[in-house]
Amino acid sequence: MQRFTAKRSLQNVSASLLRRCISTTSQTASVKDTDEFLARLPPFDYAPPPYSGPSADEILNKRKEFLSPSMPLLFRKPLNIVDGKMQYLFDESGRRYLDAFAGIAVVNCGHCHPDVVEPVINQIKRLQHPTVMYLNHAIAEFSEALASKLPGDLKVVFFTNSGTEANELALMMAKLYTGCQDIVSIRNGYHGNAAGTMGATGHSLWKFNVVQTGTHHALNPDPYRGVFGSDGEKYARDVQDLIQYGTTGHIAGFICEAIQGVGGMVELAPGYMSAAYDIVKKAGGLFIADEVQSGFARTGNFWGFEAHNVVPDIVTMAKGIGNGFPLGAVVTTPEIAGVLTRRCYFNTFGGNAVATTAGLAVLNVIEKEKLQENASMVGSYLKGKLSQLKEKHEIIGDVRGRGLMLGIELVSDRKLKTPATAETLHIMDQMKELGVLVGKGGYFGNVFRITPPLCFTKEDADYLVEAMDYSISKM
Image 1 (cartoon, rainbow, N blue to C red):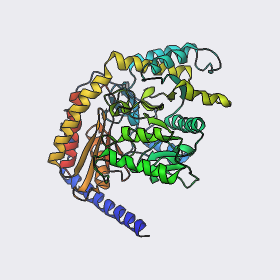
Image 2 (cartoon, rainbow, N blue to C red):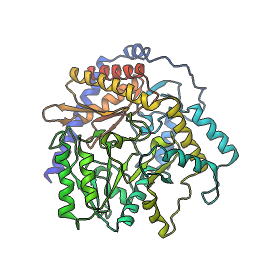
Image 3 (tube, one colour):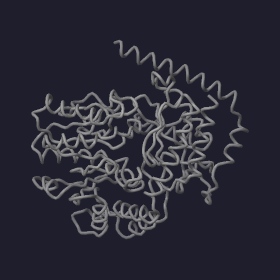
Image 4 (cartoon, rainbow, N blue to C red):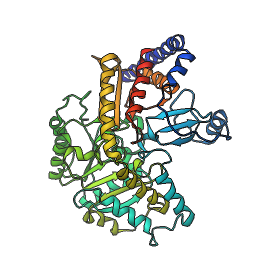
């Protein structure tokens, strides 16, 4: 009861703060100021064709009537996005927005990249869905190219439609291969919203009241809020304790993200992943790297786990794999992959010819345009600029992440690290008015998620920081 009351009290305070923020900004930020700021948006040689479809209000009304009420909207006044090109999006009026969210870390190559669009159009004109029960070059060529991006004996690919499906499959394979049922995951991690992945998710906001068994949640190795700061090896001892006292001593596997996306862009404490890896292997478990958000060059490495000197047994991926096409994958070793031959296992749309054509095009664009190198360079530059902003504004408690997977945590009290939830929502809205779209995450919804297309430039980074600076200054 005390916890419930505290949470309600925090909500009431947040609502009060939000009303105050809105009132203050309406007095200080004029339309003229906004227009003058928008004039500094980096130039871009593209104008969308006129839009003649239904208005935002019409779409919103249909959405309320016919779509699931569980589907969220980011802003108080929802955006009707009708066009996109590279790192920019356009609304129904033709207004341009700098996209620093990329459809939740999905559009790595850029919106409507011609080298992704063209092969997809050519494929869909010729053959849309042959089923994997027939031979088709698209799935074979993409699986070969994808396997070449992974180390060691990770060379067998199974395609899915999403990250949730990929993680569900990985967890099942680990249980089948080891003969054990226990899974260890990390608190604050997110792995999907199906039966097994919801159990592995360590985040009550994403859990329904359904049976979830067999998962043990280890301490989150969070350098900012965690009890051991940046000492990864101390956090890893909790994995050992969970195995020793909560299981038979043998486990099916361990699953984690290199950077927790939904959890607030938390980068794992140095030394944690390699220490946890050793513990898991001694317990007979498989190490599963969830690369759904951190994969495909986003972090400046091709895979997030590469920064931690481990080679997983299974790698799961989605989001950036298809630049917006519904596509996911599980990659593992031939030996582990063999467990799926014990029964019939099939995915109707996994490996679809159009989706895998898009996947191969994505790999080609990343290599051709050196997007991994760009993510590293521009990401380091942007993180540095955001760190400077932290020195200016007390509300910024932490700047973290790697490459173009960055998080900015806002707090109303730096010492107590009190989540500035209402302020985060308000600043997001103000940045949208200045033509910048960012996401949010973290348990308290007080972390900006910066995951732009990997074609993001230093000029784009400068504008994002200026917009954030301006919006915070007007609080």
